[in-house]
Amino acid sequence: MNLTKVTHIVQKRVPLIKFLGPRRKLVQTADPTPQLHPLAPKGATLPGGSYKNHQEQHIHFMNYDELPDKYRRTELTSDEIEAIEASFWYSFARNGTGASAL
Image (tube, rainbow, N blue to C red; front, side, top):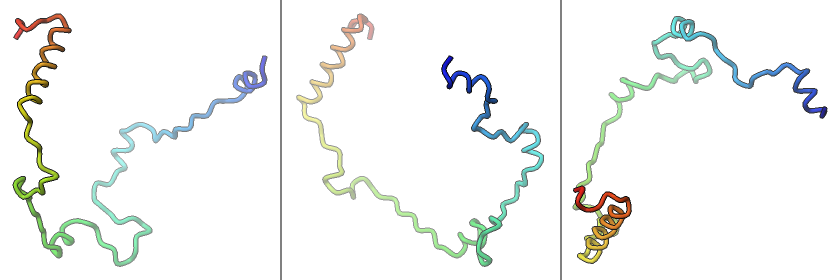
């Protein structure tokens, strides 16, 4: 036998994952109220309501017409549309279903 096989047989296998136990115990001990981390600075506050009261909400929705030309969708030419439709019918016919299935 190889030395590695012997060590695998003799040594107790210890999993790398540390399990926390049954979920029932986790739910009972969990506190649902938000709290600061114990090492947080003394003047720190919880994120939430007070933060939103002090900061103005600026939401800007951009219209697609305002986009620069390089970000706009290019129009398809009739040749491109025909190539797309031809490739669809080709793949449709290759699968054995034929065009009559539509």
